Image 1 (cartoon, rainbow, N blue to C red):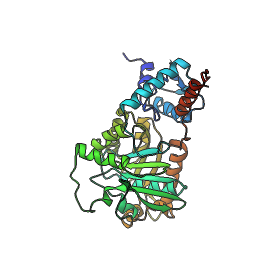
Image 2 (tube, rainbow, N blue to C red):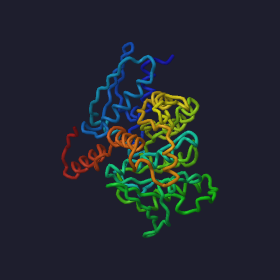
Image 3 (cartoon, rainbow, N blue to C red):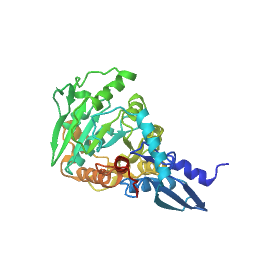
Image 4 (cartoon, one colour):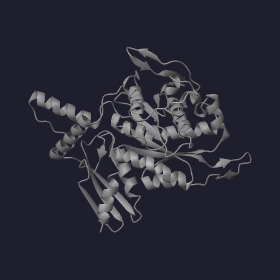
Length: 385
């Protein structure tokens, strides 16, 4: 019979260190779990005390444990690993790095967020484009990789067209100024006609995405948003191998059926050791001109999905005709005035400040390795705190 302690440990296997690309349990970052009735106390050991991912990991731990119905309180005690534990974690990280991803043109400091859905028709591409624009409004440089090879729509939604130029044998993303920020885009829509069918599968499909990541001049980026095709297919599996530091934003609509389907996208991400960063609910309540709100597609699907996954609900986008009209016109609502622009601005704030804030150029592991290498070069002993 599974004990409550084992249940907590199983939930913590869903907490991914996005830098090391593995679960905190398998990395040995959870030295002890104590359960007293409905009270849970978890010790989490980080590689160094000043790890910039500390708050994020602690929030993810609390969120996962809170999904257990019997839990009444959660205490997370954060400590620092001893030398032996750090050595084991770094050895595992080096092994995974050797086995995993090839080099890409995506800057190491960029936060990579894949926008996913369990099925089509939930507005995933509209969310991707408007989130990118809202982030750029904050003065950031945001890349959009339109990985929905068959169903590309990002160029139209942004009102962008043109040919992709080559520089030194690599593709140059098209650019669009947004406020004080910048959006860079690569899409099959720039390489094929809008009504042309792309009939690729398997290795050919993955190779196209790989070229967008490796054979492109992305330049400096704060965020790279990847608009994934719906479902759990070849592109999603290939992305986990090509960019293991990718984090996933799951888009759903309010109905229970949509919530259950979207959960599969999150499950696939976690099986590929990708962190699920949060949920965005689209097509929530519609407000008529008299101010009455109608839940035309039901309510609470986003919150239910977020709770079941142990991640935050980043925001709910109301059902509004302006969203589709702006997409057809190529003028994203996030770039203008009005209610929807304010909603997307808040979603961007939550992403940039709470869910996936920009990391320092030197992360905790990078600083650790640098200090160890310096000590070895000098023939000294270094104390890592």
